Image 1 (cartoon, rainbow over the protein chains, first blue to last red):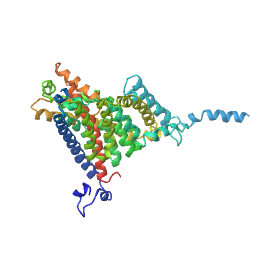
Image 2: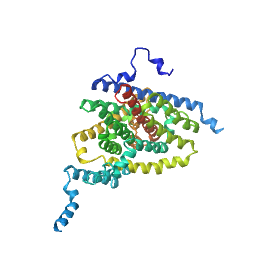
Image 3: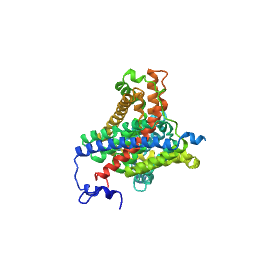
Image 4: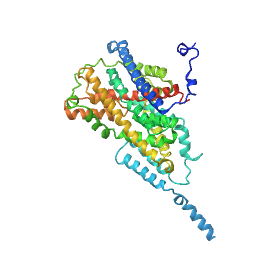
Length: 65
Length: 382
């Protein structure tokens, strides 16, 4: 079982099914705006948190020792 | 015999006789790009081969982009399959020092805000009737990142590749002219004077952190946006080679020999897409306008987010560094530093701005990767 199966229950469409759905420009533009901007901000925010953690895991002091 | 001589002479003038009205204009445009590159030092590494390629392709009957033409061979070798931009990314990764960003990871968020222009411009292009994938390719000019724009347009809107590449590189070089008025308009004099030298930053990043950083970004980015993994992976591979210190030969080759050869091939084959009949149309003009709008919106969103960070940190962040959250490295960081110095001659924003600027580099690639994955999720691309 792959991780995706946890999120897709029976009867729900997969991305492959969505290809059949015609999408108007408004829906397309709005979706990209929300998911794209939100996704970029969330992804870089998560990376910022990870970098903070990495710096705690690999501090400079240990290196100098 | 006289007829044979006449036929021979007519063969010599065949090129001139077959000139379309658009060809001389494009040859002049090619010369202008050469002038800007050679005389004005505007992105010469790209504009010189692009300009020369544009001249070559507008000389009739040479068939350089025909099936076995040498420009077609180069184009097929690395542009149509997106290889060249990815090879350039390895070089960019090897040249980039992410230390200022790692010292203050919160600045990553400015690199995200600096990409909002991409998505806003896509919306505008859609409003003006562009096809979905064309709009996406145009919006990516807002990444202020030539290789990303070339990667996306060569894959999803190859007919717009020439116009998008020229717009991306032209506006990147015009960042020092485009950004300052927007920065000034959106900030108060008090905000521009904020001194960041006292801002408490966390410790500098250790070598181990700098080595793990590209690996984490690749795995994390790849998992959430697999469609953009080639973009992320190549820039991070270059950076890993630089930081690990054990493959300096590969790192140096990536940032010098490989990047140089690929830049030449990439430039000349982009120029080869600028054939007059295909290039000179209202669409190209609109792409140039949208490219300009995209970069203005990036700057505005970056500065506005910088203002938000300023409020949230109790006035410790100078909003000017928000403008550096784009990928135009290091021009955008220099602009922020220069503008900051204008209003407070003891204010050195450079390291903070460089952090935001490198955040913008990761941000532009991440934004493109996320966008491609969203497009795939929506079923727009296979």
